[in-house]
Amino acid sequence: MSSRTSVTVYGENTMQFLGIAGPAGSGKDSAADYIVKTYGGEKIALADPMKFFLEDVFGFTNRQLWGPSQFRNAPDKRYEGSMRPGALHVARTRFEEHAPSWLLGVLPHFTHAQRVASAEALRLWFEDFAGQASLTPRYGLQTLGTEWGRAQDPSIWLLYAERDAKARELKGYVLISDCRFLNEAKFLRERDAKLLEIIRPGTDGSAAMAAGVAAHPSEMERVRHQAEFKTYVTHTITNDDTLETFYRRLSEALVGGQHGAFQDHRT
Image (cartoon, rainbow, N blue to C red; front, side, top):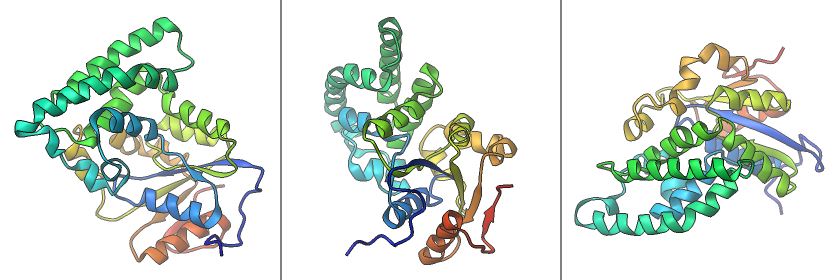
């Protein structure tokens, strides 16, 4: 028997984007996993192409990249002490092997000349990351996604996600579970998509910032431009109780109903 409920929010032949925002550790991935399991659809994280690249080049594990936040925040011991030189040598070899095809995949709309410049910028990113005293997946993801990626094209990861969804002919919800920037929130609004903001008391993303770049834009833009970002949020959900309660609040946001810790911002 299927674990999905009988509730259908969108038709089987319809693709509908749905965004989730919130600080690291607030429960964004748990929310996305529940929605997919319960209502169907598929999760597409904007960070996925970055994670695949870090997996291929630096050998970070599935748990480090897709597991709970604390594993992205922890330094990889393989890049410390006597193991560091050998591990970095392997990473450089893998970089040369994987970078060209990865660049083509994330920047297909670039001209050859533009990709040449992007390749050089990517090499500089690699040397910066490899030169850090401690290598955390968090730092790699932050800097690859923003300092390199958004510098090439602010919409690079949005366009990748949309191409991926269309190429796979996805139906139902297409969940973007890591909406961080204003242009990403605007992208969802332009596609008539809901944007769920997850709030978890005591979780402000400080652990992520400590493990990555201090006050990094990927964690701070939503905070620094809170009033503007809020204009794109359709629902705010507080994750301050049991998992069962959190799931119920998510369902209320998708199919209706009211709860003290669930706010519908739509007019």
